[in-house]
Length: 74
Image 1 (cartoon, rainbow, N blue to C red):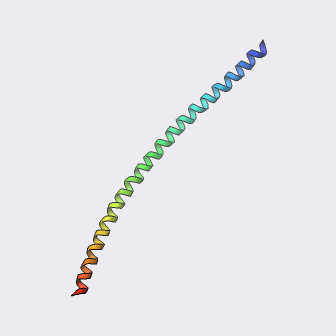
Image 2: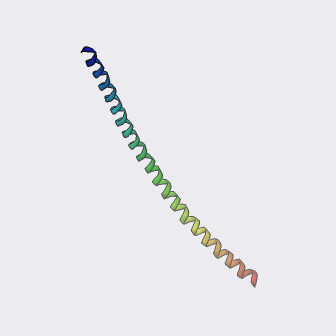
């Protein structure tokens, strides 16, 4: 009878430690995911700024090419 109680206590401790480990892993995953999403949002924002600047430079380049073509045709 005493061995059944001891084995039950050991198994319940193991189950409780596994549940505690899963909860800790869940909180870590949530924290890490939140940090990554903040950095990812900043990355996307910076890429949109660079895309706008690249589009502006492309338009300026196209305008200068047209001006150069009209200058060479004269």
